[in-house]
Image (cartoon, rainbow, N blue to C red; front, side, top):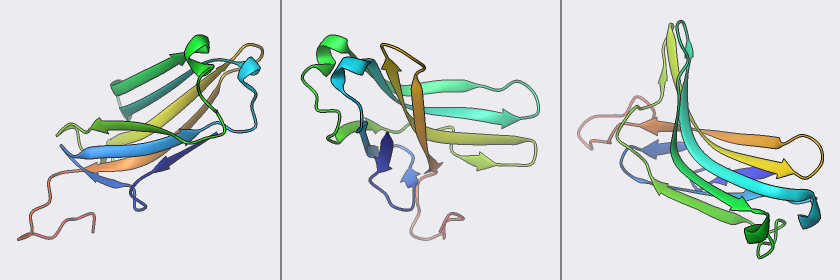
Length: 130
């Protein structure tokens, strides 16, 4: 199972669209009872860890009958203005596209592709992410 982002550098500007594609491959439709694709952020560090789902799509077993799991499937959303990615000493904010595959037998599979949500770019000032 793979997730590919449309920006090779993995940097996305706040308030702008994110486009990604997911693909399962090597699985027959009979083995799969659901697929979920989401765009989310989570924190890690000292204190409580938070997780927030920004965008979510689920395909159940009936909807999956019309999908070729070996093909790429798009997921698109407009990203929010905050929280932006942050890598501090005590707190880190991570963004990712996560795809979960639910099987009729066995454990679910999860893959995620991290990306950076950065503040709006200003041509007059260089970005710290350049």
